Every structure is written in C-alpha cells, then in structure tokens.
Length: 349
Length: 183
Image 1 (cartoon, rainbow over the protein chains, first blue to last red):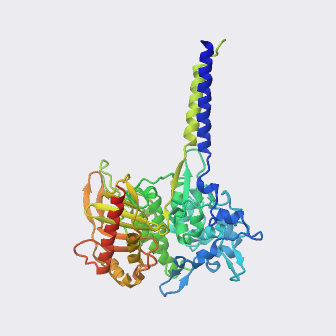
Image 2 (tube, helix red, strand yellow):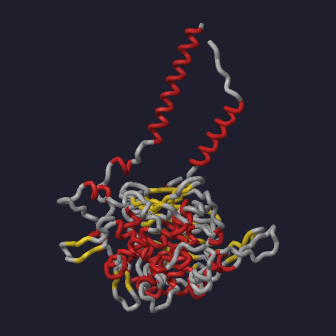
C-alpha cells in the first residue's frame, strides 16, 4: 500500500513538474518577432553593419512623400533636418533632453547614442537618421516649443502655475517629473507580419516599481517628430500617474482608446499638448508654419480616432490654453449635485 | 517520521509576504496608439460603423458595428474581400480629381454640422455628429492643414457632393461585405 501511494505521489510530482516547466517555457518564450529579425527591422540593421557602419533605414523615410510637410506658402519641410533641431549644435541641449528619462533608458548605445547624427556620403549631408537622433527630435518639440528652451526649470512643483504660465511649460515639467525610464527598442510591434498597423510605444507601470516607456521602430521611422513629441506626453500620462486607457473596442484604435475626453487620460493630454503647440505665436522661432499645420492635422485626426465618445472640443475651443494652463489641467465640477457629477470647462465632453 | 508544524504566525507572515510580493509585482502595460492604415468611421442614426484597411494587405479588412454610445466591448470582425471591392474604396479616397469635392464636403460639415445629443442620468449628455470620417495618410485638403481627415456630413441640411456620396455608398457596401462575410 505505501509503495502504491509513493508511486502515485511520484507521478503527481512528475506531472506537476512538467506543468511547471511548461508554464516557465511559455512565460519566457520570445515572441515571433524576436526569433528572427525581418530584414527591414532596426534589429537586423544593427546586427548586420556594412563595413562596421549601421545602415540606418533613412533612405526609405526620406523618399516617403508623407514625411514631407508643407507650410502655408507651399514650401516643403522635413522635421528631422539638422537645421531645425537645436540639440545638434548643443551638448547642453542633449544633456537636458537626456534628463527626461533617456539617461536611465536601456539599449540607446546600440541605437545611435554615440553618434546621433551621421554623415551620408551619398547626399554629403549630416542626417538625423539614428533612433537616438529621432528621439531627441521628438523631445525637442517639447523643449523648444517653450521660448525658455533648456533654461526652463522643470523641477518645480507642477502646481506652480506662476512659473509654468503656459501649458507648454507645464507639459515640459510634467514629462520630466512623471516618468522614470525611457527605453529604445529595435523591433517593430505590428498586428501581423508585414502589417503597417504597428504599436508606436507602450508604458509599463505598477505599484512599488519604477515605470518605463518602451519606444519601438515605428516611433523612430514611421511617424514625424511632432507626433513623437505628442506620443511622449501621452505615454508619460500612463507612467507615474498610472492612468490607464478606459475606452475599448467601440473606437477605431480599440484598447488604445479612452472612453471620453473628460476622463483626462493619455489621449486627452496628447491632444491638449498638440493644441498648445498649435496655439503659439506665429513668429515662434521653433514652431514653423509647417510644424503648426502638422499639429493641427494630428489634433483633427486623433480626436476622431482615440475616444469612444465623440469629442466636441475643436482646436478653436482651446485657443487660450497657453494663457490659462491651470484651467486645462484640473477637472472642475460645474454641477453642485454630488450625485450627478458633471465636469465642465474644457475637460467636459 | 516526525513532522514539524508551522506556527500560525509563520504561515501568516509567509502569506502576507507572498501577497505583498504579488501586489508589488503587478504591472500594467498600456499600449499607445498604432500608426499606419486607414480608418473609416461613420456615426449615423444612433449607430457606429468602423472599417479599418491596411494598405499592405489588399484584401483583409476589419470592421465593427455597434449602437451609440459605442461600448468598450464592441465586437470586431475580420474578412477577406474581393480585391476589386477593396480597391474601389481606396481608389475613391486617392482620386485627386475628387479632392475639390471632398474639400467642399469637409467645409460644409465644418460650417453646418450640429451635434445630436441625448441626456444620460448622472453623466454628461451623449452627443455625436452624424458624419463619415476617413483618417490615415489621406490626401491633403488645403484648407484643413496637413493630412487632416476627410469628413462627410450626414444631416439633411448638409448637401454632399456626388463624389462624396459615392465614397459614402462604397463605404457602406464594403462595410456590409466585411460584416456579412465574417458571419
């Protein structure tokens, strides 16, 4: 009898061990995209340098007509040009941008940190073709949209609206203070192999841990630098604030959607930043008409794509966002009845 | 054989540590939006219909249909369509000769579109604008900035151009084909 019991116990233990092994194997199984790098990924380019030099996928980007942006006079601009991004000439600006969480980030050494802009022998121009450079360009929109640029003290309390007297200044401090780590990644995260519908970035957060933001190939090469800036603001809202998307499949972008504008989620923050960027003085030294047009187009598209309930606010309704930033970052209940809360001002839907 | 029994306090401490560890390790991953593809979204007559196309796959489409306000768990369907039907919709969007009509349609809804609202207890009124919106890397409408969405109003006071009406009708056909094919 004890012998039979022992045998059964051994079988049960073996079965348990197999199940545990299976669970462990499943947990640590790399995704298909990581098993083999398609030859159009950054991972492939990094692993296969030509004569020791990584062939960054910039040529395709430059030829793509959607990457060129027109101003009101019909002139074309490329936002990733070295001429329009002050960090190229300034070590201080690079250090300031690194302070947004990039300095704690992983993988940037492989993604161009040693040489964020490279010389292209074909065109004989210095080009911002590395993921690091493209990321600096995204942050440049957050930093240089403020006239103070890198002189802005981003360490003050976020409720200090005497100092952060425009939404753009407040947003720069918000991005600095509300996230910990920003990682670069060389792979794409697309819905299916060869799909063009790919994840731009994601954020991992939780109690008792440092949050981190992961940026993917799509962030570096498939969206422009203004969209990159808006994406950073979006992701930071998920990070230390831990505000999750509460929308869902009733909206075109499914789990990346928020239920409505007034829940003040990541999409609302992204749109507020785009609106503030758009509503800057016309003679702004950094925000050219082409950049302003792009912010307008992004605002107009994403207000339809990212919310389950249609957004009633238009760009014109947010014209004072840089004059009254505190008005836009606090939800104000306009109903006195606590049983029927109804948020007003611009955060109401 | 002797067995040592764990003291209740030891067991309680172990359970507490395990629980805290689990809580501490809980993470939440938030995906930001995706880039790429084209989206057609129509809010009309208390119903939302959405169609997503990926230009890299000429036959695959995804579609959703739900009553408004759209729930957070609406079902999506995926279908492989007749390539001609699929291309018909894309061709209409990218036909440059039609851009002036599309621009006039976008101007009309901007000027005359009005929200349809219904009250909800304890929440702000639910409001929507009856329209079809096309987003993605769509052709540029000059008066609406760089790659702004195409918009077509669906209210009696807004007259649609013939080109706009054709795009709308084709959208309905493709959406129905997707929804029915996936049944």
